[in-house]
Every structure is written in C-alpha cells, then in structure tokens.
Amino acid sequence: MSVPFLLAPMAELSHRALRELIEGFGGCDEYFTEMISAGALIGGGPFEAYYIDAGPCPSRVVYQLAGADAGQIAAAAALLDRRDCAGIDLNMGCAAPAIVRLGAGVRWMADPDKAAALIAQVRPCTRKRLSVKLRLGMEADPDYLVKFCRRLEDEGVDFITLHPRTAREKFRRTARWDFVGVLRRNLHIPVAGNGDVADAADLLRRAAGDCDAVMVGRLALRAPWIFAQARTLEAQRMPAREIPAEPTEINLEETALRFLELLARYQPPEFHISRARRFFGYFCDNLIWGNYVKNLLGRETALAGMERVLTAYFGEHPEERLVSGVFAENSARP
Image (cartoon, rainbow, N blue to C red; front, side, top):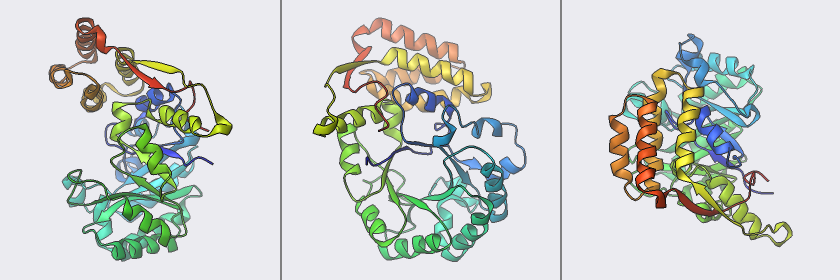
C-alpha cells in the first residue's frame, strides 16, 4: 500500500481554496487545516466558520488546534468531534514568536508533564484520530524527543508528525529526516515526516524511507499538482500498475487565476489579500521574473488588481504559461 501524502497545516494557506485547487489536479490523502485558535473557536469568533470549512472533502480533512490553555483546547476538540473529519491535530510545533510567547506551539515541548496532561484532557473529548505535529523541541536531542513523544503516546495520541528542526531554526537549516526514523523506531504509533521535499521524485524517496507518511508544505504551494505527479511517477515504477507516461502541460496562468477565483468564493474579503500574497509568494517561483511579479502583486489591494497583474504578465510572456509534467488525471490517491 502506498505511503499517504499529507498537506501541511500552514497559516493563511491551508484553507479550502487551496484544497480545491489541489483537488483539481487529483488531490492528496489528507489535508491538515491551518491552525485554528481553540479560544476563538469556543468563543464564536467571526471568522471561525471559514477556518472549520472542511470542503470539498471533509473525510480527508484534519483540523489543527492551537492554544496555550488545555481546557480551551479540550473544549474545542469536543466541538470539532461533532464534525465530519479525518482527525484532530494539536499544534506543538509552531515556532512563531507571538505563538511561543503565549505558551502555545512548540512551547508545549518545553514541559513534558504539561504536554502529557494536555493529551490526557483532550483524549476523552474526541473519538476522532488524535495526532500531534511537533518539532525536535528546543534542542536537537533524540533522547528527549523520544521520551517526550512516548509520553504523548501513553496518553492516547494516535499519530505524530515531526518537522525535524528545532524551535530556533525555523527554516534556516536542512530538515534532519534521520530524526523521523529514530522516532518511528521507538514508538508504536505511525510517524510522518515533514520538511524540505524538493520535487515529486524526492517525495517518493521520502515515502520509501523510514516513515509512515510524508507531509508537504511549501512545495504544494509552488506546485499544487505535486501529489498527482508523484503518484503517477510511483505507478510508472511499479510494473503491475503501469500507466502511459503521457506528458501533461500545466497552465500556470489558468492555475493562478483559478486560485484567485477560489479565494473569492471560499474566503471572506478580509482574508483575500493576505492569503493571495502568501500563496503567490511561493507560486511565482515558477516564473522567470517571479520576484518582479510578487512585487507587483504586493502593491494590489483587491483580487481584481491581482488578476490584471497576472493576465498582463502572461500576455507579455506567453512562453511561460505552460510547464511540463507527467501525471494522469485524478492520479494522486491510490
């Protein structure tokens, strides 16, 4: 059976519009949402309906909760338990200073007792699969990491995703995937790896290594077709499942405009510009003059203006509209 491919939880990015875009290329096995504030959710925040919109495929969506208060997180998990979803994930990996100062994200990893108590409080609140996404911790200490995760496992966590960088490293150094293998060999629950997947071939190489799933973040923004491309490449390497190696051209202009359309449809106006800028900060890396386009998009204050920028650029550079790939329609999920 193929190793599952997962979309990472990314602030201002892992929302319905992105899922719809990726689904159009064939989709992936599970989509983690951007982190949902437990306090805002139970408090009935004005935008929470958008954060918990699990379309278009609720059964493959994992809600990620973030917060510093165990009681709020447990209450939020109980609310999400009523919804159709693949699971609930707790954020113990975000290293953004504002999150850490609150005592949330990776700050949970500084206190194993407190983290274990959180799981003990949340576990009875949901029948869904309960998972945790974390980093190496404050230091790259494999013994500490294993002991910490064993505590979570003992309290009822079903699944762990490791982004193998420390809290201070952010994205500054290469993700140390050997820690994923160390964790997997020392736990009785599945372990996914996340970080620095370069392309479809690299995604398959990671999947063939010492992990139970591979989570992709930034690459899926630059190439929303990456999961489908990897599945087709995988099939071509397996004689029993051979499919024709038909080149498929990706239309970058159509993909970019489709994202703006989906953003307008599924996100509130207050979110449009911030989420568009975040997405195109990665997607424009496909373009020769990508930084130039990012700067132009950054000056716009409405989606219509961003559409004009993109249409004008591809009108001036039609040779950049199409990029080649090799994948079959709806090939992402086995």
